[in-house]
Image (cartoon, rainbow, N blue to C red; front, side, top):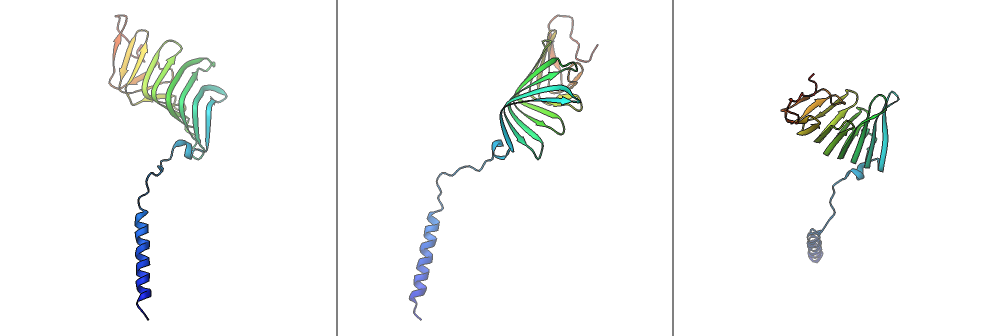
Length: 189
């Protein structure tokens, strides 16, 4: 047997290795980042829905875009508006935010990004995040907030409140009064 087939095989193997080595530079390649739209079971544009409890309207939720995840029963919302109603069906407040998450089983809504709540009686609340637990009848935030009322402004680094914002606990409260008579904190009588 001659040595030529072995040399030819070695030369061919070296050529293939050189070609594979040259293919390592890929240039531009797409990212592999998954977005909400890539993994959602449904995507809704200009979504609106009404949340009821025992046949009573509690909230009306609207969003520019909603991503529905059926397995986790979660809805991710973009540019959201939530209206809140009292037991008689009267609107009591309107919340807006850049994004939010609604967990259907737990009946928990979290709003994030420039969250603003305008109450029909003139009060206003601003925060970066706000969480509403419908089953517990509890509104919370663990971020700084500003609560404006006709008699003054209350600030803090988080709070827990009933949905009507009549009785709540504030973390590190500060504020100003407008009428010179002093300002009662919510829950004080």
